[in-house]
Image 1 (tube, rainbow over the protein chains, first blue to last red):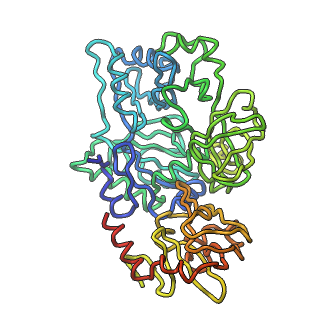
Image 2: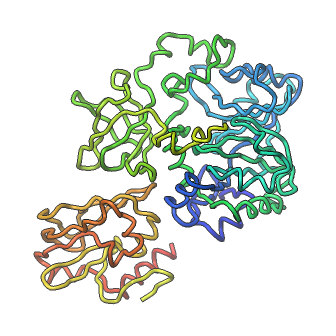
Image 3: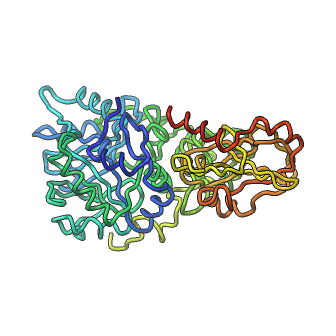
Length: 370
Length: 136
């Protein structure tokens, strides 16, 4: 039996549905490409209520999280939303996540839907005696508003002046009369927000539906198809495809999340090892001259196989096949020419540094005021 | 005819894999059905055979890809490709907009159409096939 989010009645009426991480979710409403372009050019909304939302609170909360993630927690300013990783003892990535620092001793931890249960088990296993982590997933909804016009779409509903909320910051406020936590973050590469709506459940989803339907008046509803193509075009990894428990942050090209000099977090001993810091392969972008690379395709050069595509799609912006891949270190320089066998034909391509779009034209950095 | 929102022109022949074929003079024009196009949702890339390639009935002759998925195209009949839709390289979305018109894939000079035709479905039989798929 599939789980549903609080917005399921809307999706069932308007979208083609698909199964994802145990949830029945919208795959697309009209067409993936149209939804993708709406986010790059205007504003789109996504139901991301399937993601896990955990409240970590109390006097021990900061120390607990400090031991859990490779990024400094105590030194983060109040109202910071920061990207980090949960690691196992070997330094492998259990999940990637956002931690929102609500006060000196309370944090909202937002994790991937597919890993939520495993993350909770990992956190509970490493928490101090008597420490409780509250799962807020069932009693909240979560909606992402993404795109250059996201602010225009959300502002009329928000009590907070969004102009004052910087990238990777969050604040508690009201949205359409509902208590909400608004964070200027996302998974598309664009400017935008992720809104956690409080006080709404599957039994009485009116609050979530109200926020969604008001946003849908000015933003394009987007399904998981566009969510995946947008994150890929932005070069953002998907846990379970591009990174996993066997990938460490160096291989994942995410070593920047490890705060300089930080020790004492789970996995830190393994990552201190030279061999961990110089892995045989590393995550890279790949653009094909022609054809679409897909998960599992081999990346080759004249000498043979030098890597593997971990996720691939067609980029509606550059109108080429793009991928994230794992390639051996000697072949990982940007601009390295490789080939990918797309069914019968070997297609030429280049190793690149994502995002795949021109950052002068697309993505949140084009907005100079951020 | 219209079957549950899917257009199935009466004058075409169909495969169970959702290709259509239309015999016109000495050639057969081939494409994918409205159902196939709608199921793919948005075609972003078409890999067609080349002119003079030979294709075989029920064998893969190319692919149609959406952002998420790859779908094989199985040739409805055997023959030699005489023409490839030149518009699809730059406008693959024509397959969605007009699967039976501007979104056609290739034209083939058939080698054995008289007997191969028997393996194809008419509009009514294709609608019945869709009906069983949609009930699954």
